[in-house]
Structures are given as structure tokens and as C-alpha cells.
Length: 172
Ligand code: NI
Image (cartoon, rainbow, N blue to C red; front, side, top):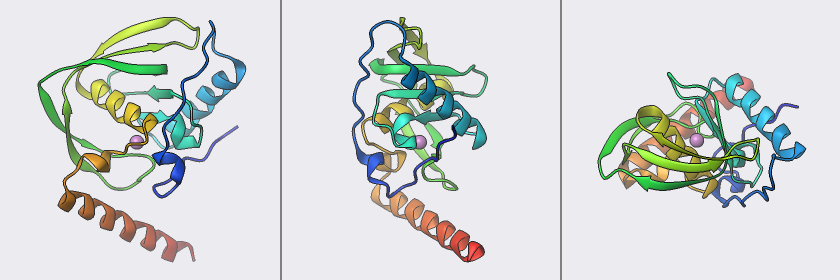
């Protein structure tokens, strides 16, 4: 089953996702959700996707950062962040076509559960650390544009509006 990625303006993107009740191996619904999310992410050539972006309010995200493998995080929590920060350009499949520089911690330690129901801890840096922070934000109803100052945020939002209008004009 393929799932649509919801776009900016959909209220689900602003909602906090609920933890999964994990008792050993993830249940069939969760496994199906992850499969669908992987398909949707690859379809759009994304490097990460959170469950809220396909309209499911559960604490699940996936990553496929450059030079890394596919990863699945259930009930993820960032348990440590570096003091050192980094500015990296971000985009989002729910706000397609626009990008902006965002400053965040350079490294994170994340704790989560695998589909097999095993807890793990991962130390991430570079793009993987960035994607993890961006996706975890989604599970808390936060988007990358929330990290921008007012001017940069309006620039990104008006650029996005223009893109959508141009797209609507082409499709009509
Ligand atoms: Ni995103």
C-alpha cells in the first residue's frame, strides 16, 4: 500500500506523535507502516521520513542518510547532544521544493527500538545526526522552518507558496 506524504498546512504535521506500545517484536500494523514509509521515502528520493508525514501519529521515523544504510527508529529519544553546532541546508518532503540553512547540534546520541523489539543506542554525526534531529522534530509537531528567524522563515514560506501556485497553474 502506498501512502501520500502530507504537506505543510495539514494539521497532523503540528501534532505530537504517541509512543508505540512495544512488547517485543513490532506488531503487523507497525511493520506495514514502516514498509509503506520506506516506499514513500524512496519514491520521493528522501533521506528521512516520520510517521506523522504519512498521517500516523506514532513515534516512528526512518532514515536513509548519504553514506549510511536504511534505519528504522521506534520510540526514539535523543539522550545527548553536542554543544558544538553545525549549519546544514535542510529540506522536507512535506514542504517540497524549498531549502534553508538550519543550525543544530553537530552530534547526537539517540536511543530507540528496532522492529525486532530490541533497544539500541546510536551515536550519530554529520548528515545522519541532522536527519535524526529533523525527523524527531516531526514527531513533536515541529518543522525545520520553526528553526529559522522571522525573515528567513517568510522567505521560505513565500517561495513555497509561489511554487505551489505555479504547480496549480500548470495542472489546471
Ligand atoms: Ni521533514
